[in-house]
Amino acid sequence: MVSPVALRDAFQTGRSRLMSTTAAPALSDSGSYIHLPTRGLLEIRGKDASKFLQGLITNHMPRIENSGTGFLAAFLSPKGRVMYDVFVHPMNASTANDADPAYLIECDARALPELHKHIARFILRSKVKMVGVTEAFDVYSVLDGLPDKANDQDSAPESAAVMERVAQMQATIGMLDNRAANRMGYRVIVPKGQSLSLPQGYKQGTLEEYHVRRIVNGVPEGIDDFIAATSLPLECNLDYMNGVDFRKGCYVGQELTIRTYHKGIIRKRVMPVQYYRPEEPEPEELQFNKTQAHAIPPQSELFPAKKEESAPPVAASSSSARPVRASGKTGSNVGNIGLALVKLDDVASGSTFDVMDREGATVRVKAFFPTWWPRQPSSEEEGVDT
Image 1 (tube, helix red, strand yellow):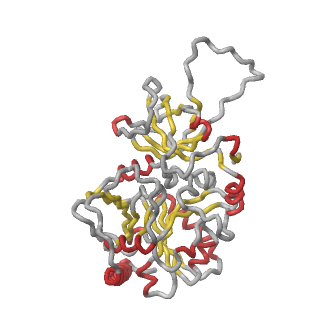
Image 2: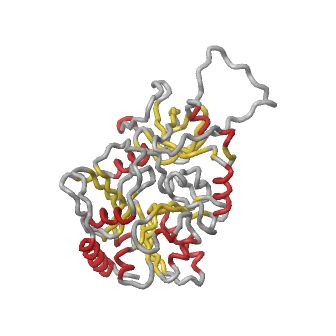
Image 3: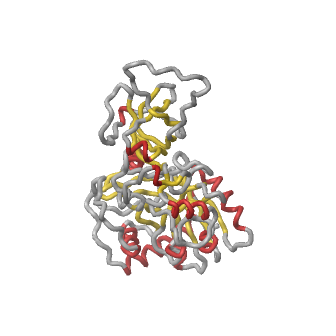
């Protein structure tokens, strides 16, 4: 295990090397930085580290094995269900002085113990070592002073440009968080207690602000949105969020993922939703309101909204009556907005849903298509039943 002191020294050495060789573009004058204490970290180091991870995750390790920026990925079950969503970060400063590649695996801190066990099952004779290093680092989200609705045509900068920007912040581990077409800023990791180097115009944001930005853009994250061994990668938008490489070789859970991708559009996806009382008017666009919070437990079932009828419905016989099937499930939420797995056809047709809050009251739910999605989903008839 590498001690926190040794890690700090390695970061200082790598940072000096980056700063001395890089002509970085100027930082914007305003923005925010948000500490993410809810994230956990595993270090995987060793001669076989790249090859080992290549066989376990949905993204393509050769893209980052020579250092540089990291990426989003997922560990799947053998049946192709998402076990854990993660970011994989090359440890640039350490690999500069070390023959063996090393990576930081960033995940929901609540999932860290189980992720550790999951990875350990596959090590066998691979020449890798794994250790938890959450206490040695701080994870930050850095957001430029840009409008939430960024230009959908903006292309992501090259890896070298991203690392220049990270070096400006006095860090050596970082990446562009491109889960929502450049709307999520940068993800930066520094040794515990080290401050980021940012212009005076940058303000410290809150964890709530980070989750609001994530939810508004339809970005699932962590165990509230990815239910272990239940969620499908494409249902959780991993394809849209650059978390799956469909051209790479075999990895655990690849078969179902590739088959679903080639057969067509899936019927359900995680989307942003707004909660409101049934007596309130239906919202026309997604609007966050902290004061109108609704306590909705994650994984609550959504049902078609009950509509008022002018005449009483005809009673159905017990032999023909069928129970109403759930239309989806909720995920994480903040205030009056959240994420939910819903059927695309229901959303396209303007349907709304009902869900029960923690006190047993009915709350109305409306879903919205994220504007950054690469294309509007096709109808359910053209999709694949997953």
